[in-house]
Length: 78
Image (cartoon, rainbow, N blue to C red; front, side, top):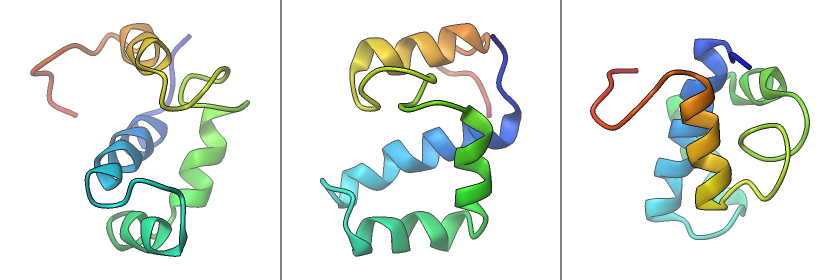
């Protein structure tokens, strides 16, 4: 399954925002929105729940599957 670049960018920004904010509170989404003002539309492109369209969004296996399904690996430029 391939995801649009906009959806991949959202997942990356979402996960990076967790470096500063460990939960999904107002400050977390303000941080995401500062980088991606259209984050809601980008999130919707993923379909389903979680980072890879199913499962817990912060489960490393789910995140890894998302990137593998999109042909991305360590060091790849987004």
